[in-house]
Image (tube, rainbow, N blue to C red; front, side, top):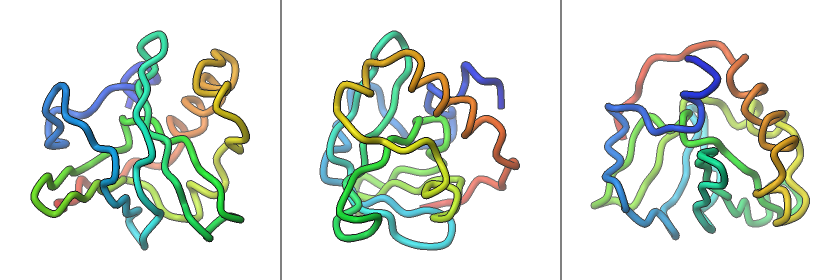
Length: 123
């Protein structure tokens, strides 16, 4: 996956332009992560901020939409092409200002771009 593609939904992801994913549950390939708290698209770097609840000390994680492999609008569920451990190992999301910080977003994009490719999974 090209680095610029990490910020775009894949053609087979099930995403419909303008779709609001707020409140959708988010699952990695090996378990649940949390719920979509918000979506953002600063400078074309489209991503989801996922509230992990008590997981990861009650914080949030930032996930580029290029790792979304499936969206089931009926079940309100988003599936990712990475594992829980890979999300935990991503650059730490600390403050909302990072959703607009080009250096932080570049580091996140580079990290997810380097992950091994996975088969697309259906939701």
